[in-house]
Image (cartoon, rainbow, N blue to C red; front, top):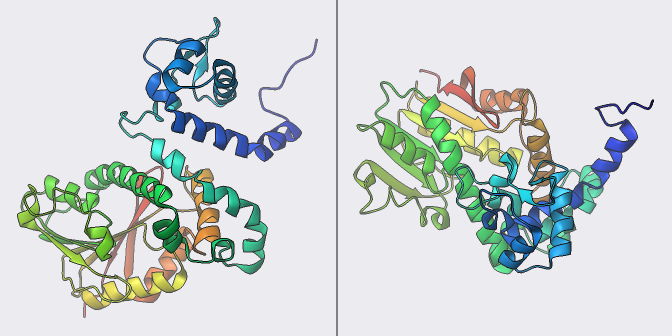
Amino acid sequence: MTTVSPTPQPAMRLRELVFGAACAAAVRAAARLGVADALGEQPTTVEELAASVGTEPRPLQRLLRALACYGVFQETEDGTFAHTEMSRLLREDTPNSLRYISLWCTEPWTWQAWPRLDDAVRSGRNVFDDLYGKGFFDYLHEDAHDSARVFDRAMTTSSKQSARDIAELLDLTGVSSVADIGGGQGHVLAGLLEKYPTLRGTLLDLPSVVANADPRLRDGGPLAERARIVPGDCREDIPVQADLYIIKNILEWDDDSTRRTLRKVVEAARPGARVVVIENLVDDSPSMKFTTAMDLMLLLNVGGAKHSKESLVRHMSEAGLLVHDILVVNPYLHAFECTVPAE
């Protein structure tokens, strides 16, 4: 009698890996079609789903069957399809939705850039400028407005989700002021101000970013009296003094930006001030498959890199910070607790 190993043989697994683009494309197609939103709590026929999302039934069945192989949707014995834990994450209305993250990681530009990964590995620099004749963010905001909107939605979703974890993790006892450096729309800052009613905070990021700051922080918002919004570039100047500085997911563009940002924090802060650096890591993390993939994407589009523990500690130490502890925020993020040396 022939037995089948529960673990795919190396040749089978490699075949699956090299067809990874098909899986990513299938997730993207389902997200764009809104299949997860159309599928209710009960198993549904392909014909009903096709009518809801405006597709032909047979191709939709092929798409869902492919996704079901990876646990995204479930095909039942009678041929209907039902939700799984993963497929629910593609719904726009579900808590912790990954719909826009799924769209962002499969945007049209990615399909042009990934085949050039060998070029990026040879040169150590991004391939985006050669492909599109301009830098990544210039391209997004000048030539790919739909992609820019997807990027903004994906980053907003991700930031809101991690902000809750950060507010839960950090103990701000004795802290009266916090500065969120390069803090995007300020979701982390808003979460901390809500948790600590006497805390005051400053959000610093580029003018175009803070123009769309969290409504809770803006004039008329419930946190506005305790929040200050400062437009600026943290690589050039940080005109903020605070008890605690938070730097989250901005030390990944390139080493020069990382060094300049950390130096500016040390220059701005009072001796003994607390600094918390929060980043994805490419080592010692249960999310390494995801973070190492993001690391390669950063190489492709901006020439950046995710950090290992060693590289991040080295950069912080070289900037003059004293690193005391490394905390796990969630499976994707680590927080490095530091202080500015006392004089």
